[in-house]
Image (cartoon, rainbow, N blue to C red; front, side, top):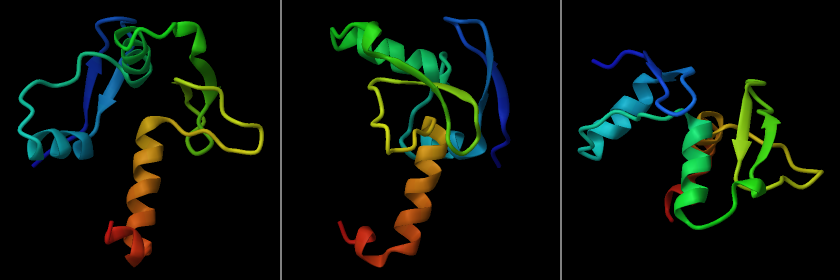
Length: 104
C-alpha cells in the first residue's frame, strides 16, 4: 500500500525519503499532510519553536546508518547517537523483543 517516496526539504532543499513506515504512521494518526522538512531541519525547527538556541544542536553521524544527523543535545561520550529513523527502528525492535516493555 505504501512505498518509499523522495521529497525535497523546503528549508535546505535536500532530498529525503518519506518511508513506507512513516507513511503508515501518518495514516494511522490521520495526518493528511506529508512532511515538508527533512529530519535534521525538523530538529532545528523544534528548537526554534521551543525558544531554544539552535547552537545547542549537535551534528554527528548515526551509529547505525552513518548518515549525518542533527541532535538537539550533545550525546555523552560513552553513548552512541542515532538518527531519528534508526532510533525509532531500534525502539520498535526493543519493544518486540522485551515483553515487559510492551506493558507500559
